[in-house]
Length: 463
Image (cartoon, rainbow, N blue to C red; front, top):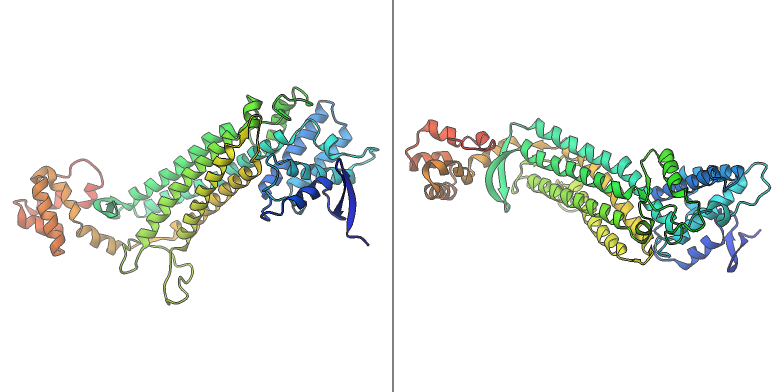
């Protein structure tokens, strides 16, 4: 028995695996692009299912599609949404720049499945005439990118960042009374508390959430209804508005019709903006990850202010060595996101006249960035920050010998005198307070008050 069946399209006959739900156009695209083996993500395929289900429902509502046909299409589309046919989406992301191949992949899969599901219908449900009715790849794929991105940000990234933000706040409060040496230029500076330092990290994460939320306002405008070039040829004039309402209902997200279909289809400015905000979050998390690595460095010859939980052996040759693996994973994720943003940026420049022609690579990189940032943020919170401990004795010893604490004496004895005290304390490895007592007329009580590290963390003057 043959392993293939013969399918036909406008270009002729094509051999297709006999059990495949897809047809001729998908097979041609599969054969044309043996590039990377990278396929569209689950999030993208799910969003594409929502697009097709919404379109069928609206076309039926407008009297443009038979109700029975529309119900069969919606049922088949729901199976795509549920992930039952992911293996049928076989086309490489490095394909036609409009994503037409993947749009037709979905049309063919849904059409074949709808024909299997239809009840008492004497009609052959067609990929173009029914599944793609009133649509073009040129509005379907840009819409799918936006729907997938909004859902991924709201359901995955923002909850992960909120969790990380909360974890930093809680860990900071746990060690609110611990004063440590602040650092600028990687050199000793005035003291801060663990809570203050971690509050800075928490605020970075909080602002990241606000940034992506702001970008979603533009990403939520959907191009659907513009069809081929933004004019809406071959679709109902109310289709775009009704489509946005329907897909909002189905997904639980808030979408609107694009204010200007020519902008929405010719550009990916909104996804580029979102990618830029993801890059900013990556930069924030890179800084945080590197700080934690420095603070954990040692255990004997580094900074050694915190101790990250030992998760796995760190060396194949050095017994007992343990490395900050979660932070290293995080920083690699951040590097990938920054690189993805560069790709999305170049992709955004490929909007010649009425259509962008790098949509698949924009979709892949944007959705990957959202996913790996969310996973890395959650992993950092659960496997690192929530479990770290503070080496209080080590921190106290470093604070006591920090010559920069002399800054608090500037208003009392002047900068030059304070500098001499700092240099002497550092050169002799002695406590600053001890040297200051020798070199000034200040009493023990005055020095105790002026050089109290906890007071220095509260701003203002200490005298």
